[in-house]
Length: 304
Ligand code: A3P
Image (cartoon, rainbow, N blue to C red; front, side, top):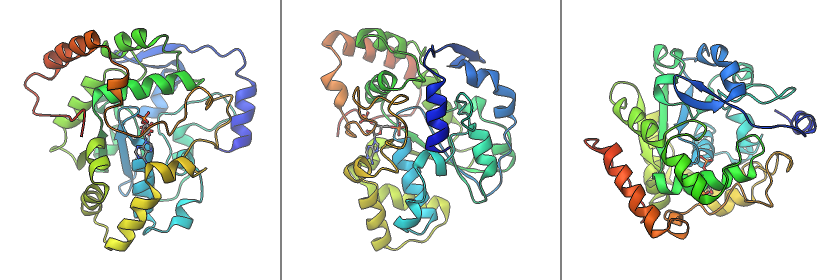
């Protein structure tokens, strides 16, 4: 996916209006639904590594961390292409002439690092057939909700979220693209012992990035020295990624991602929800959370 094809696509999108479709009851962009057979039949390879997340859970920094691990911490190699090019988003379908995520992944040599936001029940079965290693990153729902609000506002290919109050209700009802946060984090959690899944938390990565990186290297069977881990930590800090043109989305034309509305690298903290939730919203959210998470041994931190 090069800048020229993105710009050409953007030109053809002047009258673009978002339309939604459903796959097994989960809302997605209609273009994705129209290509669903191709996506579901994606051919995973046994040495692929997949990063799976609910949108806005810290996907990009995990992509960058794992890519650096696979490159032995070589920053020059990590700078070879923007994150969204070197780590294809398998279910991405944008207007032509931009390649689909499936096409981009098929073009890559092994070993490939891939990204998905699919809920577990919709993951292409070849990932399980090939016993692919998956790193699942979960982030607390309140911060995901806030982050998704700003992302939907700045992104021209997602629906306008409306007001914060509108978005609060849509998100809680699971009616945003890629569906319910609850179903997503619970589905992947319940599968973590059945497949090769490392389930980690954004909040833990913020608290102690090197501890979480050590977890990832162990899972991936990669040996890296403390110095290399320190280098990866520095290169993938929020401040470093905000400045880095390969990670801060500046490679995407502003007609597709309007950085004057919100930055892609926005805040990168735990607890920004406190600046957005009203007291009444917090009560309503906590009640719904209680119902949806009842009996699930999965806990999230909403502050550090
Ligand atoms: P905020 O909007 O709360 O700032 P994703 O990559 O899944 O789209 O997630 C985006 C969220 O991760 C954004 O959250 C973004 O700022 C944050 N983020 C991106 N890079 C980060 C980094 N290196 N460290 C911490 N947070 C990061």
